[in-house]
Image (cartoon, rainbow, N blue to C red; front, side):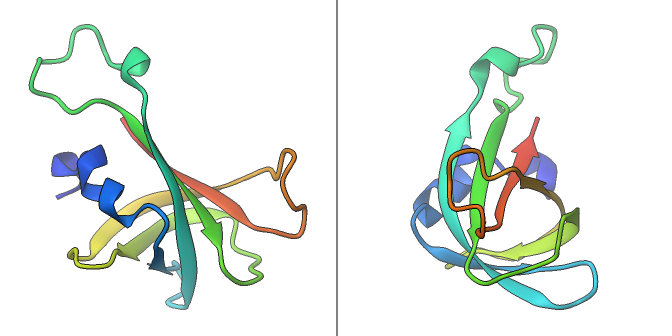
Length: 106
């Protein structure tokens, strides 16, 4: 399923809260901050019909010690995506108490 997901799948959820199921089974509400297509990172030898790489950025809606790992994502009005690797980002100019994450699809 993940190989079929493209940026358009996530775009309607921008600005909405989704639920992330962490590797330990707990859940974490996340705000979908942005969906950014990274066309410049496309493999020049990839078939034309292959999706363009994109990054989904997320902000945790509560404090968490979670750093990274395979998760499931429940988006509003979408089916659950399993096996999505989520990694934590440094705050870099944002609230240092916040927890920021990204999902990279290449």
